[in-house]
Length: 499
Image (cartoon, rainbow, N blue to C red):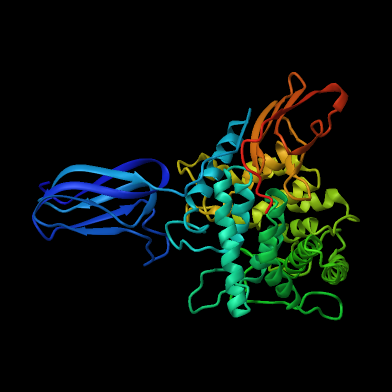
């Protein structure tokens, strides 16, 4: 090369890779290899790159440290002859075992981007993002787990189970349930992420049947929720943790969010205690949950929705969604609640998953699709193969917590839902919401479960592995007698993990 040159290599999508080069050069030339996500929008903040210093003559180099991106730039100084530039793809050893295809291209593309985002945020741990921190934040890991049980083979389960083990072992050594483990000198705790993680421990059991994980998770979970004190009205006394963070963005109604999360974590502890035969514990958690839930209902305002305090004086979509998921909304006017959720967009992509869950749990899956398309439009239309940390491109462009729509589509639209239990019982309850055709596969501990729905012919076929009990319902709003529903059994294709 006669002058300094930047060579750009386009990768098939955002992947983990190690860059390789082969060249002739004089000694001492400095080559910078950086992915397209090296620069950030924060002044003075950069992500990962690698630097190679040449020796004399023909030489080759492959970076021992992996990078990620959709492009890789090789900054070549003058005086170098390049013979080859290549890359080696590297990734966590698990394959796709789930899928979602329908007659709406937007939903199909969004599902695939959710999957790609999950996959690139997996390696030795779940990562919040691969290009910046590579840290296992438990709020992220909880959503990633709920994605993987719908889309990846059983080898992916080990990543979540190892993460829970790391948290439990850290707790045993320190008495602290932390949000980021392994941890350095800063013992980092985000209480609302921890409460979400406690809920997730039991959710995972309903898919995996792994009782040993519950045995590991229960001691730290039960002790953590009991560290919370209640005031005379039954509300949680606020626990700020290392960083008082409920979500990115403004107008978080923290009192509603914290008490709703706490109710859900207590409910998960009740289920874990019952599973382990600890009835006295279950009664303690159940009584406390009832008390907090009763207090939370006093925060229903004159408009019939949950509100305590926000910066703009308006109800928060996240807070009301969590109140729904905490089963505090039985007496509310559903139309008012949905109206608030549909017109308010405070949630970051992290909390958006719970807003979509709440709409679906209320039987408003069609509204969830409307909101999902509106909020994810820019990400779906963008050339990036992965989803962003924020609704704009000001932060990480590959953030695992943004993949909640994958769960919406597989669990609520296709209707594949694990029932309360050990992963041996599923319910198929689709909600077509105007779609004419859906084909969805989800992995189970017995093998793949596939649902094919054809609205034009009013037919539904469920292919179910042996050992799995499945209850099949007609799509919501349809008469079962008018549908041709076929259940087929196949031989077990994967070993049971009911440990």
